[in-house]
Image 1 (spheres, rainbow, N blue to C red):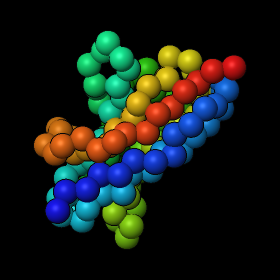
Image 2: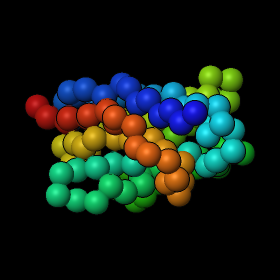
Image 3: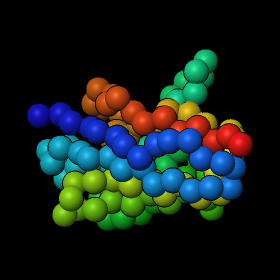
Length: 114
């Protein structure tokens, strides 16, 4: 069974915060580094943050210091805490393995605007 269900997006003012959640089927979650990907229309979807099975995290420069990725092994859930949001963070956000192996879920839209 393959399941990636993202939630938590919405409309937020610049400087605000959001927490995204991704419920992952156990067969995926238990064996992979997990990541959050950003997709803006006209651009390729790209990885912005990842967390290994041991909890080590990596970030692209554009979100470093503002976004925090984490994983809850008891809940098979990956989180992305987004602070100090900027208009350029506006995008659809998806979770998947890193590198991406599985079909994309429906994603969750984040819009940063005043």
